[in-house]
Length: 410
Ligand SMILES: [Zn+2]
Image (cartoon, rainbow, N blue to C red; front, side, top):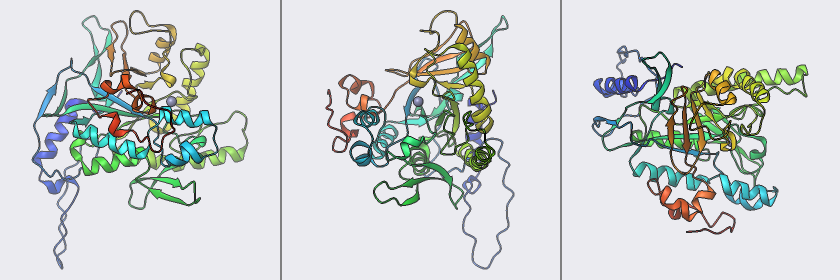
């Protein structure tokens, strides 16, 4: 797996600060009447994320111990129109309560980002947290890297599940797809469910909100890193219907699919340029604890064909429903499904839990990890209050005025 190593990241950051600020991507306004002479810019050796100019002197990097936790939060798409989603949309009550369980609203998300930032976290790339090495006996295994972070900061991974813009979400008060704006940046397309008006925004989508937040708070990110987008494939990706359909093999369907594929490529490209990276959430949002190995093999191939072909290979697998293959696989020999998934290039296997657990397996080159989940279930939960207190106070975050009246246990 080729990825940005920690050392390269630290080096890139060091180089960045070694150049004058004019080399950071923004140029001063030329004086009137004088043609500016372009100074050749150094060719960047790494991801050319546009770096906002630091407003304070660079903070020295220090080693984050391999025994200290690297926290990991994950979100689903955020609810742009909560009153619609929770009350006014025509979906069933159980569907609305599902949104309450698993999502946060835009306002809650904004408050969470601010609080996480205020608590000293800095975004790092999940691919940098561990790497594969060869043991003395010639076996490959995964191990934690020593992350270099600005002094006083704590590393944080954020991932976003199901960033596919599923059709049901379009009816329930979410944004509908990512697009490239005239300014070359990522925007979200959104339709106001009350007026039917469609418009572009950067204020109602988890991805564009984080882009804006990092632009305003560059010290929230190492080298412009944002988050990992965890994609299924059954309704395409990022709002584009790039999936095949075994029930419709018509030329018209395929022609439309090719159009969608062509349209999403520049979005993927721009996301990668601006600090986003990708993981698999299986093609069909498969429950890996109940599906047969044969079905999982077909699903994995389909993800590679239809999603991996667009976003590139990934070593990260986010278990749908948090469901693990082969039972409890933290200890002992890996089971047949885990071995199969490993053979397909996966090294980091992420579930959901009550803390940012991690375990590098000793029997195979793989990391098992859990993620915390800011959402209605944890915001309402007294038990979760202390588990999330390093990030925020749920009492300050949850918007009980707009959520359904389901109570809290704190
Ligand atoms: Zn999911």
